[in-house]
Length: 109
Image (cartoon, rainbow, N blue to C red; front, side, top):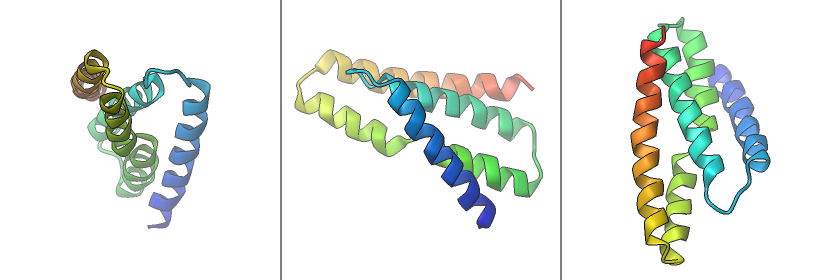
């Protein structure tokens, strides 16, 4: 559990600062973070790391780095603003590119 906590701390801090760096009206930061996290998780999974590294990187760091709850919240904000094209584009592209980048990460090994 300590390794998951350490990785989670580092992943959350990374997500926070990257989110600040990429701040934009459209939720690009969350989109980019989730896509890069999906790629990294696919890569880490394919590497068949030792259990302690999986806990540190896969579960801890990448679990905290990626953010499904923020994705859901930002989608809801777009719905409230009645930006239907952006809502559909954001949800569809996040799901499509998340799976695509995880696959690319997995086969890159």
